[in-house]
Length: 465
Ligand SMILES: [Zn+2]
Image 1 (cartoon, rainbow, N blue to C red):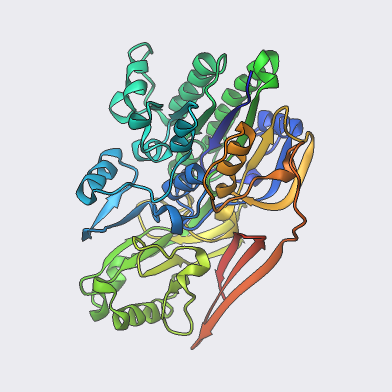
Image 2: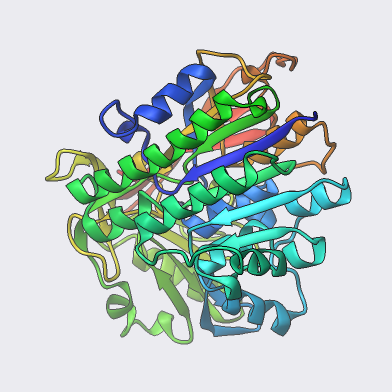
């Protein structure tokens, strides 16, 4: 039997929520293998941006899915909602372009003659981004939202199943059980099992609220049943399992209405805005004077955190600092102000947010440590057991590591093989180096902390001074 690979994503799980009370099965799993103690998300720390990084092994600047909502490249006044599969497909048709600029795991596995399955209880767009060419590749993507959101093979499988529940927690459990009962006995070369919790409950029930912790415990229990079957059967020798979260969360402790604040500003004329925990501004024809005026105005707002623009005023950092310089990206990218200070719940991390979520709700998309710090664990017969890896690691490292385990040579990716966790990999002699990017002018200052490890860059946190 050949090696197979499973990635289980707990959407939005903060590492400090991995506790004996919340996630006994995740801790049981961690003890079987290697836990990465410095795992990081990407910027913006939004689900579809993270999803594309997972499946391509590349940073947003290379894969091109640069925000959860971004201006349509051919119709910049209109925002594309990447959570909606049909909106993504319509944009692809409009542009005659692929959604992502680089190959995905599905493409690479198809070229190698190996199978790839996606099972997701996330949004229809999220499931699609995990394997945009599922149909052409003859691979199965099943979205728990239904056959219309699945690839033809996924839609066909629905005909054999009881309909999935509609509540997010129950839908997540249903999706995990589908993997355990249908796929685990004879797994494809690689599977991604993406669970929408504990993210959805953090947004709508409150970060750290009893209902969110209950959702997390339900996901952990579903994962525990997969773990039991894996350990009890022949797959124990062949299947390597990775567990990850795509981003963390921070608590909303204040609101801003960025569109209203910008409305009367002459430099905003003709621009397109998307904002939440972070935001982007698309400026008509990339007018440099307009970009400079808007970037400078942003640094004078109380609710702003970091501001990134190319050729901006001295207080602004270049977009390349957060690897956000892609043709689809806004010419100005910013975060709303966030601090490490505890929220009223006692959980570290407080942030200003623009949108419909309430005070006390969880949010993400920005650069604070609680949004960027993620869960990453790997276990299986090829993995060093009972270990903690202290090197920085990230979402872009998942695909290269999966391909290495499967013995498939893929294209050059931004990520690296997480050799420090593998029994057979030669670990190159590298030392992580801390980097600090700072900019200040007229009473405003900002800082971005990153870590470099060889050719890889990991984002630690961004903050306003
Ligand atoms: Zn997410």
